[in-house]
Length: 304
Image 1 (tube, rainbow, N blue to C red):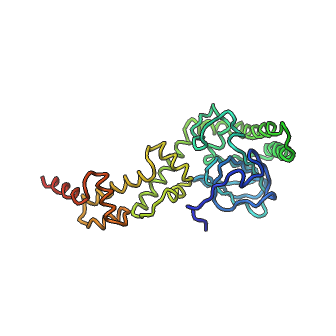
Image 2: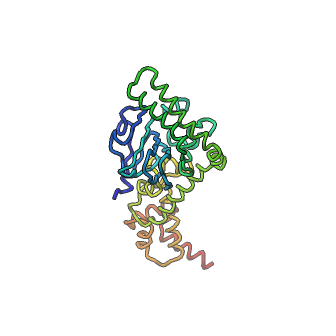
Image 3: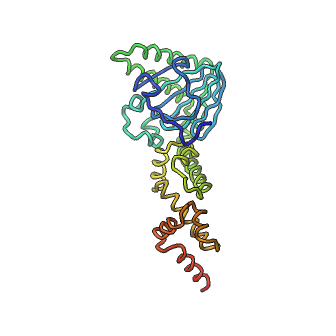
């Protein structure tokens, strides 16, 4: 079983023949069968063999004639059956969005009107982009054109490939425009971020007594990359992961000191500190007094 805290992140050079755009079927190289992330965009197309897709925190059906749109840094795995068939497209942010200059971690905050190309990627966890046979046949024509172009690169090939890619995304946006617009209006991406933060906070609460609690493990529990979680916490809370953990440990410590007679060494362990002296030093830094004095003041105040 793969450890969630050791999930790999791939760049284009590791999983593609070129740095800008790459299209292949399952015969070109072995598929990744364990959860992973990558720094580039990906579209997966199921040509046959029903399965499921695990993208971010969502698990959705992935039957034949369905497309999956995967943002950079998004944890995912699609376990294709042995007798199934699929195609995938990898491409860089600069290839798709030449007009847009922002950190890939901020893509979900880009307004729909500024980059409509992002719509299927932003709302993949809420929709199944499935096509009937006639619609899918048109998409397969575009896929074959892209494969033919990619085999023999020339001066104008990149522009033609980008045009085909935009047509493919455009077909999806046209077919699912009502659902995509409703999700955008309802700010579904912000709900997704709140859900992710909720998973992080749950993880912190459940593991607060563990001195080895880490950003890496919390990110894995929330189906995020450590970089994205750091970015998200700063944006949504203004704090780092270590600052949040310390804040909650101090809150728990004050509660124990105020409402129990446990020895300070036991309270230190319950709050995730293996060393009582280090706990006392951190408590004093945050609260302006050592834990014993804090307890005495609380008791004296309650007797007044």
